[in-house]
Every structure is written in C-alpha cells, then in structure tokens.
Length: 388
Image 1 (cartoon, rainbow, N blue to C red):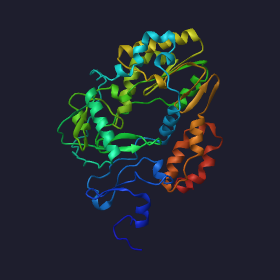
Image 2: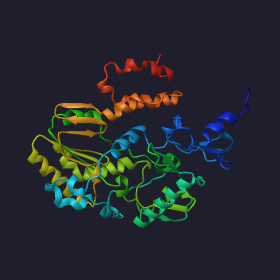
Image 3: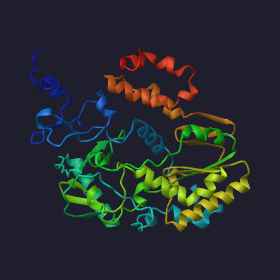
Image 4: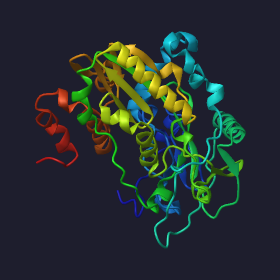
C-alpha cells in the first residue's frame, strides 16, 4: 500500500482502543489513556510529532524517568512511614535539623558552583508551544507552579527561548513534571566532568562491615543557576513562561556541576576511601563502628555548613547491608538487587528494536554477575543489527 510521504496511517480501531490525546494544531499524539495491557503504561508517555507538523524539530529523547527508577520508587513506597527521630539514631540527633523537610525548602545561596549554561557560537533561539494538559495534569501543574514560586525556585519572565513542559505518568499513577531541555542541550557547550564508575567502587565496598547511606533532599535544586543564564532554561506552560533559579533535572551538565560541588565538599574523605558519592547519594562504609560514627558526624557537619539537607525516609544508618547504585552491598559480598532482578524477569515483551535496546541496556548493568553475558545476549543483539 502506497502511503506517500507519511510514516504511518493510524486506523480507527487503534484510535478507539488507545484513545490518545490529540493536539491538531501541533500535530501531536499523547498516549496517556491506553488500556492496561498497552506498553505505553510502562514507558514514559510524551508527544509524538508527525512529519507534516513537526515545526520545532525533535521534542526530546525518551522522558528521563527510567524503568529502573520506577522500580525503586515502587519499593520505596512500600516502606513504613516513621518519624525522623526513629529513623535517625540518637547519636546523630545533634544534626536532626538536616533531616527537616520544612527547613530544606529554601532558596539556596549563590556560590562558586553555580550552574552556567554556555551556548555554542551562533546558537539559534527556539520556542516551544504550550503542551495541552488533561484535567489531572492541570491540577499538578498548578501545584508545581505555586510550590516552586513560593520557594523561589522559579519566577515569571519574558524570554526569547522556551522549552516544552509536560507530565509523564509513573507506575503508581502519579505524575512527574518534565522540562524537555533537549533543544537547549543541543546548543549547550558540554562539560565532561568525570562521574563515578560503579565498577571501580565495588571492590572497596565489599570489604566494609558497616554502611550508612544518605540521600540529599531536592538533589539538583540545591544548586543555583548562574546569574544571567536563567532565561536560557525557561519553560512554557499554559500559566505563562517561567525561568528556573535553580538547576532542574534534564539540563546538560547538571550531573557534572553537582558532582563537582559534592567532590569539593568531601574530597579528603573520598580520598580516604571510606566515603563515596554518586550525585546526591552518599555512602559511608567502614570496618569499625566508632570510626563509622565519627565519619557520619563529619559528613553531616559538612552538609550543615553547606545548607544541604537529607531525605530521612531514604537514609539508612549503620547497616550490615544496603542497596547502593543498583547493587546490594554487605561484608565480603556484592550482589544483585532482587527488586531489579524482578523487574528484568517481569519486563514487558519488546515490540520493536528500540524496546529490545532498552531491555538490553537495563540488563547490561548486571553483566558482571552473569557468566558469558555477551553470548547470552547475542540473539537480542541480532534483533537490533548489532551482532553478526
């Protein structure tokens, strides 16, 4: 059948089954109302531009919310809610303020690690259109705007550039806000600051007996955007145009900026070989309990000095075993996280080469635990054209 210059023709039966949200002006489809069996329920839903109306180029890669994160959040939601005083051991109660959600909701000060957004020479300005929202998404947008205006994280403005703003649905049905910075990232000069290699870390961790894990509250939001660069990260909504005063997820170089900040704060402890940091996850690991407590206090002291806070429900103290960066670590043992293994086993059947690549990439994280991993995966690689 000749379909001319179009990529696909969508049938009425398919439209009835999936009931997509259609923006006729922009020529986009959003698969947010699919039946339960549809793969769209486990993939992030975002606009699909048609060739005829794609006036803004690529609207971004797959939403930055990953299947791995969905699994982690599902497991986290099963945890019993406890008061901060119970989560944080008494020997650290001197720093209880560092676990206060209310205290953490402040606009951070400017500092030497403000996030600069440097554009390539002759960068072309771009402007995104307002993305249509469902009633439930509108409620979440109003909440997001009001909360972030109150904290000073965003402010209204006029800007020659704007990025798309929309929501992706999480496994529990709640909505995650997304600023799609792909077009901005394409014209941003990249900072190649090195991040921690998980493989380099495992050998050191398995020799420890005691583990404490701290999660930095608000993550990237703890870093201000460099004065004068805020307008470049503006995003557009049906409530107007807003620029961020702090870093948001998805900006190019955000991991590098945050890693540089954390490494500066804890450089000597990292060199000591008993503290490691990956973005906003801090792990303290020792053989001796008294040394362990001394190090935990020192880490909390430095966080307090930098006005950085921890999310208590995601912290663990003086444990013989913890999950860190997708693996379970205990004395003389590094193993696979059962939650991740369950996710791999329950992965929906891939529908195309892109789905196969996503599964392959997720499973690849555990290749060190699987004998002859490359040989096992060769049939999958053939499906994507990456193997003979």
